[in-house]
Amino acid sequence: MVKCPICGKEVRVIPFGSAFIGVCCSKIIYRGYKLPETGINTGDGGEPKETGQA
Image 1 (cartoon, rainbow, N blue to C red):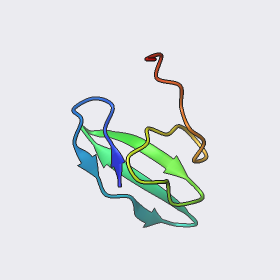
Image 2 (cartoon, helix red, strand yellow):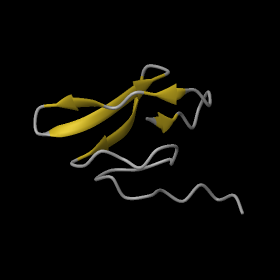
Image 3 (cartoon, rainbow, N blue to C red):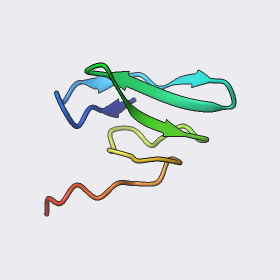
Image 4 (cartoon, helix red, strand yellow):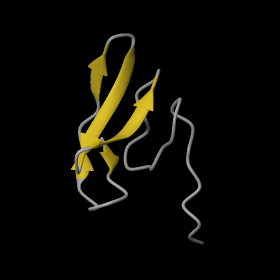
């Protein structure tokens, strides 16, 4: 599960073809070839995304 950067809900990541996606707030919030670690915000390819917060 990943956390939605828009609403903060925990979102389930599901298999989609040969990749994984997480959808919330009418947007794809996670897309990657591996399951993400729990609770991190991620960008394309499963790499962690910078949030700009310290």
